[in-house]
Amino acid sequence: MEITEVRIKLTDDPGDRLKAFCSITFDGCFVIRDLKIIDGPNGPFVAMPSRKLTGHCPRCRVKNHIRANYCNQCGAKLSAPAVQHYDAGRTKLYADIAHPINSACREQIQAAVIKSFEEEKIKALSPGYVSSYDDYNEEDFEYEQASSSFNVVHTDQNHKMQGPHKKDDAAPKTPQERQRNDQTAFGSGVFDVKE
Image (cartoon, rainbow, N blue to C red; front, side):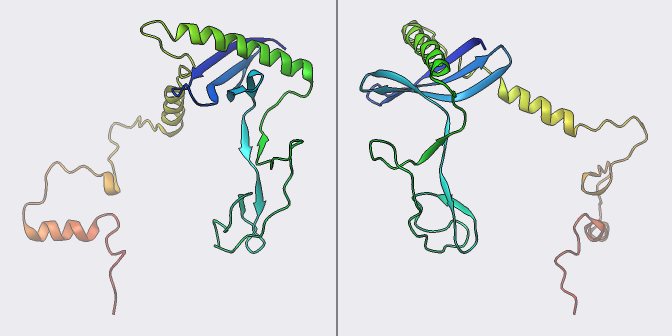
């Protein structure tokens, strides 16, 4: 496994313990985003992407966050769930989504990310600095995906649009014509009450 790219996004608040967000690419083909660089007591360290731990509501079985007092679905009062604790006695509220399995892999990731973090701090001092973290063009990708999956091409030149998208070159001129069009329009009669 080779780390082929590390992208860093520095945070704005210098007093905050969270110093940066990071994405890391393995073998040029697999990306993990939202790693965090946190200023710890022994210097900066890398925290893996995580999610909040949840528990089930006893009434409706919907998942709620560990510290929630009431169910988000049914409003039932939640009892305190059995929670796990770290070695230092703190409550475990998050679980890693992706993480290294052995210490050698963790050290490899940590070294690459901290090295890139230090380089990014130097780059950030230059005028016109732009973070490379936001440069994945996800919006373009999502737009291309959506437009390609919903794009319909009509090859028939005589195709006429129907329903609510019907284009009328000649708008109704008299009130009777307008009323007749309103009665046949898309959705007409949905809320009519019949006696």
